[in-house]
Amino acid sequence: MTTVSLRSAEGKWIMVTTILASAMAFIDGTALNVVLPALQRGLQASAADLFWVLNAYMLMLASLILIGGTLGDAIGRKKVFMTGILIFILGSAACGFAGNAVWLIIFRVIQGIGGSLMIPGSLSLISSSINEDERGKAIGTWSAVTTLVTMGGPVLGGALADAGLWRYIFFINLPVGLVALLFLAWKVPESRETDSAAGLDIPGAALTASGLAALTFGFLRMPSLGFSHPQVYGSIAGGLVLLLLFVYTESRSRHPMLPLHLFRNLTFTGANLLTFFLYAGLSSGMLFLSLNMVQAQGYSQLQSGLTFLPFTILMILIARYAGSLADKHGPRWFLVLGPAVAGAGMILLSCITETNGFSDYWTTFFPGIVVLGLGMSFTVAPLTATVMGSVSNHLSGTASGVNNAVTRIAGVFAVAIYGALAVLFFSGSVQHNIGNLHLPASTTQAVLAQTVNLGDAAPPAGLTTEQHDAVAGIYREGFVAAYRKIMALSGALGLLAGGMGFLFIRSGGK
Image (tube, rainbow, N blue to C red; front, side, top):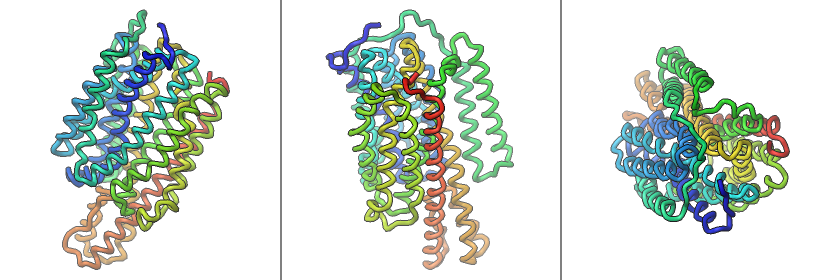
């Protein structure tokens, strides 16, 4: 199909609409991490509920985003993109009105369905519509601007949460989505592959969704039931079997949602392995960093959001030029050093113990956030351009869908597995330290029962003032210890992602 210049009116409108819609989707992730403490209190949710609020959305994205990319290639990228935006904003409105955690989880599923049609459409429109010699710059611009808005999400989320208005994190999507729909309808032409005959892979989508959901359920039930419980090992084993059946089904399907032949390209395979490890580490690291700041370190939710501004500034200054430099010099070393530096930043953040709050930010969290921001700034645009450039244009939607699915699957696994580990680390620390207080057995059990709430754990009623303060201190110490272990593990995943770049990405990006 015909492509256009990035500087042309059509090219500019493509960039505006894709950035608006993408930012709307991505802002939910970063802002939601910051408002989770307020959401947990407002809906009286447990830690497992919080993880499901995050994973319900990501499960749908991971399961259906591949179909979204294929649909866009087949019936029209703009049409599918606009349908996804409409479903997403309807789901957002419903989330804003949710009265309890269960309804919020259900409405997050609707958001995820919309996102699965919307998210691959943005990069697919760019990749198929912008001239090849400007594509890296376009993707870098998309990365920089969406990251600016996305990383501004914590500031907005923190301000709204501190004001008791956390629900507006969802409501704000409505005007943004409606503006994007109007611009798309008036200013952006349809884009599709005229020779595409792809069908819907319903069995594949069902197997992916059920397999990932079973794995998530098993891991999130592990802290309270133990691995030996049938619910836990049965769910994990069942999830693995369903995902293996998914791979088998895709290998035999006429129109697979996951074309396995794409993975014969080592660059495509390596870029997606890099994506998985990097975003697994980033998802878990950013979640527990926000929870630690608010629930253990004494930050307000606005202060927690403001701490990400250095990350945002670095992305604005660097990401677009990193895309252009990767076009000229090849992406390999960007995709080796970038993830490794990001991993080093998370390891720095894992060294932080209890602090005196926001006043200590510059000597505690700031250095690690800067290193993490540098690593991600040099990674995002080259990684996206490498994925999209490793396949032909007619598979751009599918490639975008696969890479976005990998990102979401990484988040699902990270939140489920690291969430379960965090509860185990936290409860183990509390159990070890609570013995020093010599409390009655019933009181000790009440103290331990609160560990399912992680950083929101509250000392049970009936304690003396001295005991109350001691238990609160044990909770705080235990949560910080759990955070440090999770952050170190997240950093290790970043280093592993850099190893994938070294092994698989060649200097020419092919």
